[in-house]
Image (tube, rainbow, N blue to C red; front, side, top):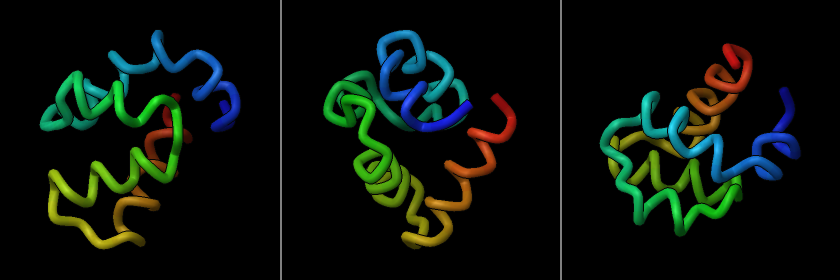
Length: 65
């Protein structure tokens, strides 16, 4: 699955995102609106990760979808 598919189905994907990163709130996911950069930023913010760590976490998650 690629990011365009995820973004296009964001409403359906929010549950999977929240399963992976439980500290992200519904409001966080609404703000992300399917934007990968915003998701990575929220992961950085909530989990104290670096930009690169957040990018790798999202890459890993996409590979497992």
